[in-house]
Image (cartoon, rainbow, N blue to C red; front, side, top):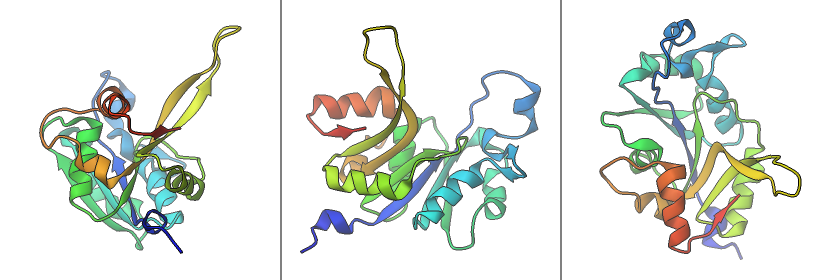
Amino acid sequence: MQTHRSRLMTSGIVLAGSFPWANSAFEQLAPRPLVPVAHRPLIGFALSWLENAGIHRVVVCGNRNSGDLEAQLARASAPELDLSYLEDSMPRGAAGCVRDAAMSCGGDAFVVTDAAAIPDVDLHDLVETHRTSGAAVTMVVHREARGAGQLPLQVPAGIYVLDRRIVESIAQHGFIDIKEHLIPRLSRAGERVAT
């Protein structure tokens, strides 16, 4: 007999908000998600990664610094994707944007990734690990070596799987980041956060 958790519908959320960190010539070419890498916009790698894993409903979250991202999405995505765009009109932080995007689409779990990264983890394995672990949130991390005798650091890679009930618990207003606000709040509440 299958459990409800094994039948969860998963949607994708791609965080594409841009904030200029420096006034460099590189940043003036295009918003980061639209910078061409191997003859395609950077965001195309995240969209393909989701689509290749069978996640067809995706919301891209941008902001006023995202340029013409919404207009460019059709060229960066596969026709099989049910793709929508949500602009963050006020700085909501990554978790706030995830909540807003999730409320605009269906799903029981959400794979979240950054539009300016090229994901290279096996998404099928990630989602299956999340589903079988019973975690409220699963974070992809990489281990960073430290000095002799010290345990390696687990550095977030910007890829998360979040259950809908966790997303719905994120405040409707205000700035909420994933690493600095949501994860510590979940840990304090005794929720399972897996890596």
